[in-house]
Picture 1 (cartoon, rainbow, N blue to C red):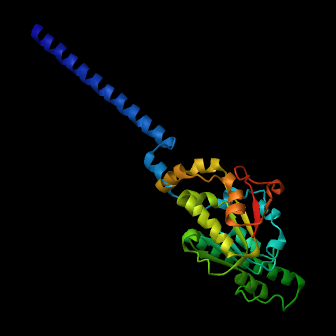
Picture 2 (picture 1 turned 90 degrees about the horizontal axis):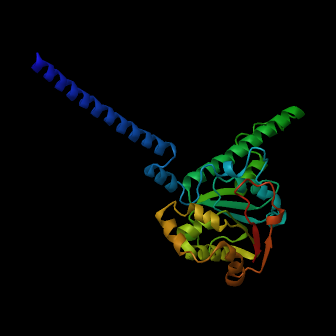
Length: 301
């Protein structure tokens, strides 16, 4: 009996140690799971972070104008400071057009330009821009048909969805889009332009191709402009570079080697590139979304 009793006590002790071990393992496992969940919740997963950083290495955001134009705006505030005389009857180029919102607005009757070409490095954004142009024309045609029906005019109520109206044809001839890496592929012997826009693009050229790429951009723009031509530039501030410097290994390396800061651009364009005059439109710009209160400069060749 005494021996049995001792054996029983030993078994109980062993069983107790086993239970303690299991409970300790559970605690450790639970703690590890909590840490993993917290890391995922805080977005600190390195692989996820890397993917998000590499998604838009050229600033080719898919919903760029969703950030830029809030729901209470009827149009991009930058359109209000652009002068009609820079576009009316002119041939224009929009570098880094993204999904084409600004390009199409400038191509409309409001500015009356003869032609405008939007170029972007991202082929998917160019497809969106072309879709947006077709959609705008289709919406415009539907509006024309409703107006014609209200007027009771049989001639005006003819179907316009095939793009047969003169206004529709004009818009297709005026606005076009093309995939292009402007820094590397644009031949300066090609078409000349009266007005060139480069809005919130300089940072991405600078981060991806360094100081040399930036000078190449400015030099090509100058060569492509007709005498007396207009260059509209919206440079991002240096703090914006700091925020996006790690989107790729290339941008991180170029960021460390950049010498020419955005505050130097005006002097570079006037003294080194050869533009004659500059006008600062920033004070006239109002109603911009948070984070987009950037300088808008207009240079004349």
